[in-house]
Length: 137
Ligand code: ATP
Ligand code: MG
Figure 1 (cartoon, helix red, strand yellow):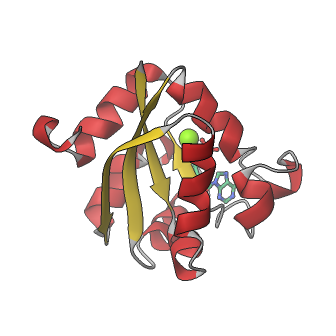
Figure 2: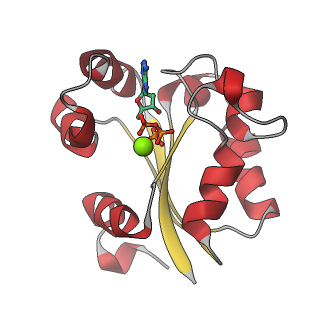
């Protein structure tokens, strides 16, 4: 069993599609092992996306991620990291496969509805960033 970190981003929370997105995970064998709604601080967002700090879109990305509350989750299941990325679809919703979360709920490459850890090593780091060990069941 693997665990991965998922964030439902401010655009999707504002559109009230939280339940529809979680349904995609649960229907496809990913169990919600931890969940919370929170408003990221600028410092949280900058630290979380620090790998992108040299990219041209970094400050826009940070402003977007703090523009409203997010839902942060630990998803658990077989091949959870890859399974989550498949269910999410491509970063740019215009390139995302039909039936993926980003194809159905994302507005743009920036406001793209969900985040998912990109590998098992980063999943561990991202889960520890948001959840204490005894908050994941
Ligand atoms: P995430 O890490 O959020 O799951 P991802 O792994 O599909 O997304 P990354 O390359 O890690 O994509 O980019 C992180 C986030 O930065 C994207 O989800 C998107 O919100 C934003 N982003 C990426 N590329 C661009 C771009 N060219 N212009 C604006 N925003 C971008
Ligand atoms: Mg990424």
